[in-house]
Image (cartoon, rainbow, N blue to C red):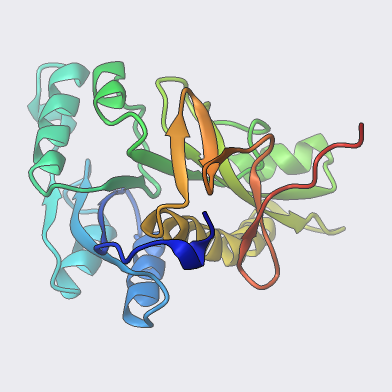
Length: 234
C-alpha cells in the first residue's frame, strides 16, 4: 500500500515526556501550526516541577503536569503514577524528548510499540549521556541523532530513523551539539509524520515502514524526508 492509497486518519495524539528546555516540543508545535504534522499534543509531562518545558507547554495552552520522584516511595511507584497520568490523555504515541530518567520495565511493557525516544547519537553508538563528547573522543567522522522505540535497555530499543551530520576539525562538544540539534528537530518531526500516516509500526520486535520490516534505520534526507537505507551489497 502506498501513502496515496491510505484512508484519512484522525490526528495523531501525542503525549510528550521531557525533563529540560522543551526544544523538541517547540519543533512539534511549530510543525503542527505549519500544517506539516497532522497531530495534537494531548499533554506534556515532566519529572521536574520547574522544567522550562512545562512553562512552554502552558504558554501554548497545553495541559502540563509534573510528578516529582522524591514524593514516591520508589521508582516503580513513581513510574506507575506518571504513566497512569499519561494514559488519561489517551495518547496514540508517547514521545520521550529529553526525558532524563530510565523508565521501569512494567511501564515500558505497558507502552510497547507506543513510545519512542530521541537520542543524540547514531545508535547503537554512544548511549547514555555526553554523547557529543563521546563522539569526539572516539574520533568518528559522522555523528547525529536517532529515534527509537523504547525498551527497558537504556537507548537500546529498535532504531526507527537517523539523521547524520559530519564531525568537523576543531569541533568541540558545544559546536557539535548545535549541529546535531539542527537535524534532530526535523528528524523527530519526520518520524512523527510517518506515525501519523500509519507508515511506522513495531511488529515482532522489528520496525516496519509501509508494512515492510526495515533492515537498517530510515535515513533523513536533506529534504527532511525519510527514506529506507540502501540494502547492503550482496
